Image (cartoon, rainbow, N blue to C red; front, side):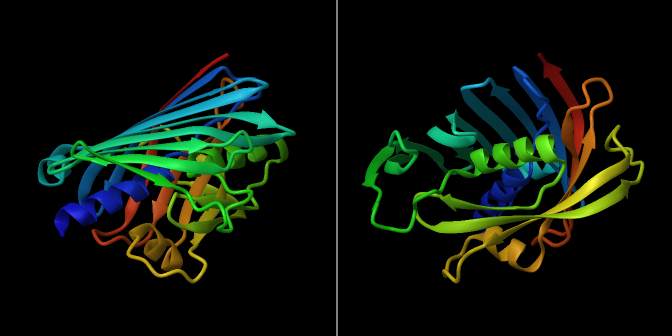
Length: 265
């Protein structure tokens, strides 16, 4: 039970740490995070995003840290590539691999030229499984979560507003991600991050569309939306997520702090 709880909590942490800085015409953005869950300095995450006028690539790595890593070790790498089509980001490839105390998992989603998932190749501890996606399901105009986060960051960079609703299909279920702009707020100075001061506060809510399931991410965001604060890098004026908060998780309140960003043009 603890291992399942840890993987699902860490999955939530990955989701909220996928927000990133996105300057105009950036070639590469590297972003580092540190997450605290309840009393634990629980996880670190490294994120890299690349973009040009035709394509994009997102890669993120998350690993449990300190005592939390001793109790519930987990590490995962997520990679997405895609291209820009009529000012819209369309997923081309999605790959995932993770290692916990007792299992090693992989997932590779194959997409059509229209960005529709066709096939999922997954494995657990070396046992491979190939699944054909039922394209008769309501998955038109859906994408993966990393691309959704890329799209909302791109939107904020252009119009300075995070109000949006986007559709995701994870290979099993379709759900909506709803973003809301909550206006200007102030981040208090904290020893865990060098970033504080005036910021734009936004929320992210996941609508599970009345589907049943044991996904902790759905349960948490149904009762407690994910809040995040956007600031601008002083050198490049690039918007980036300075802090993320989830008020209630099974292990207590979660706060994720940006510790460093590096923009390469």
